[in-house]
Image (cartoon, rainbow, N blue to C red; front, side):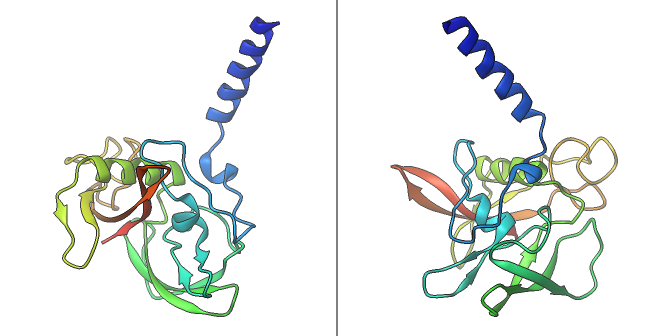
Amino acid sequence: MIRRIGLLGLLLLLSWAGQPMAASLDCSDAGKRLWSRSDPQVNLSHIFCGEIGRNGDPKGFHSRAVALPTGAVDRVEDGRHHGGETYDGTVIYSNGRRKRSTFYPDDCSAEAILRSVLYAYRNQTGDHPAWGVLGPSAPEGAASDGGGQGDGYCRDARGRPFEIRIGTIRRRGQDAINTAFPN
């Protein structure tokens, strides 16, 4: 019996590991926070779904890896940008409010963004003058495919890392990444 349960657990784990993270993110409930299983944990809702605070303030939404609309975000109005570069856009939230947001390159998958956020956290280069800390999205040097995310990290179109700004909070007695976006 224990052997069957262990095998079933292993099969479930392997089947989950093969699924792209963006496909498994359910952003339909704007009030539900989704956290990564990484160490430290990352607020996936803030980065990929957008959030509406208790007072109605719009927060987050830094990647288009999850299809719109989400529970919190209706659409994004942006100027000119290229898929392999970071950019700013105006996010229109489901409550009608708007805010400017900085976006990861559209070429970056949710998995690559999460990996880059964790890399930036573990390889901090210093404090941001206003708040938070800074770190690179990837190790120095070009990705193996000459750009994008050939090594699993989010990079710009020329294969270079870019700076990520990170804000942390205490969650369950440990540091957790509440926000992370291109600086």
